[in-house]
Picture (cartoon, rainbow, N blue to C red):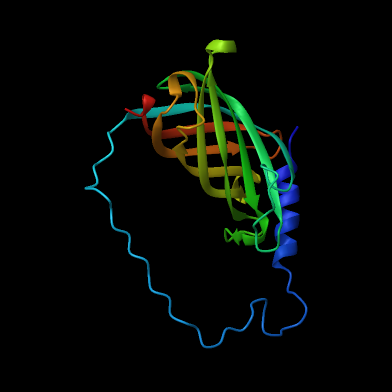
Length: 212
């Protein structure tokens, strides 16, 4: 049973909210006599053209929080204000407009930059991550890769459930098979109960298969 995110994230959030000793001049160096920097102007090399419109992409299915650990999911240095990040992992199956999918998602949550939801113990933290959906198996499998950003929240009014809301962009360079070179964008939500990590996923957007 997975209950890592509420316990670890709330502890980190409480630590981040504690007043720091000293008042000084803050963490930033004093800046004197700044030199104005001209704002760069970008001129297109050719007349821009509109990107082709894709088809409606939908998905809905199950979601399970499978794990949580300190640090970023990629292993890179945490860019949070105080360097405190958490990697939360999800997995599930989904029915989509492109057929049945199995999927995994890794979300890096920045624990130093959380804000309260207005309820004691409830808060939202910024995060980003990757979503990998697979169709088929073996050599014939097709993989749809997405990157996403959005808030990761602890919902006190729903028994401390985790809710991830993200805006996604399909990654054409890393998708494979029928999804190779595909582009698109959209929005999705993942949720998981604090008691057992089980929940749901829902997504809506557009996809341009093959990028054309």
